[in-house]
Image (cartoon, rainbow, N blue to C red; front, top):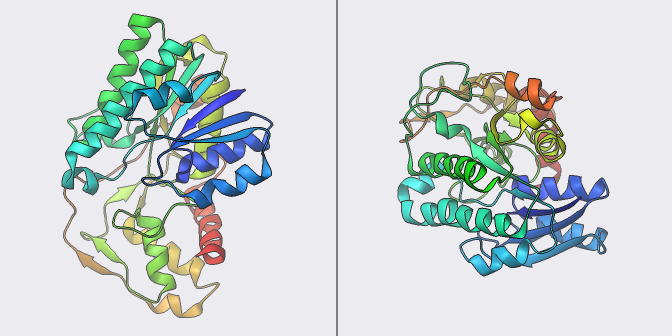
Length: 322
């Protein structure tokens, strides 16, 4: 396949680029390095000079999007501004990137005759829905600007499928973690942030009492879902939204205990560190647990990594790389 990965220098995007290249596909990465990192992809440019290209560009620029899809068969659209707190602080930029940029990419893809457009959706779309586990067709009202943008993307994709015979698959990611997820910066995700704190012998701060829960999803499960979405030949599987998760719930208190256990294998002093607690964070969903039955049935999804299995891999990577 010839695949464009937008946001290909980011955490998820670079892992997708690496997997595609290792399996013989041709890949173009589009990134403006707002949150992506050159070190995530420069080794890939050196290793795969014939099949990997980088286009520095911004999805908010339609010309950049049109250039990026030239000669491409498939798009993995990972480029976005993540983070609920960032969207609350700066809703305008989040909207510009996640809705305006998405529109540019989907229009450019439509006009270029892309075979299939696979995009990163978000579990934040479930909003204030209290039902567990989360099933794709039961959502609530969004709780943050970020959540609104990701839901709007789903709506646009559906309209494009109905109006232009455009083929898409949207993947609602549930708290993805793993190698290359950035532990630094103001909007670092909870797992790399806590790992960094523990490694520095500092107490991580839990928002609330620690009983909020998440369906933490290891990166290799996400790669599997993206590959299935790209390659499925099941006509019932396209133009659909899928939960992308393991289907297991972990509280923040449990997460801290697992991290202490796995990190103390490298540094026994970490086992003595106790977290602090602060107020709950605005816009946070209290509990998140995915039902992945739809993905299993229509795509043949078979996640290989439980949260604990993935966490052991991630901890080892962080210990060796930060």
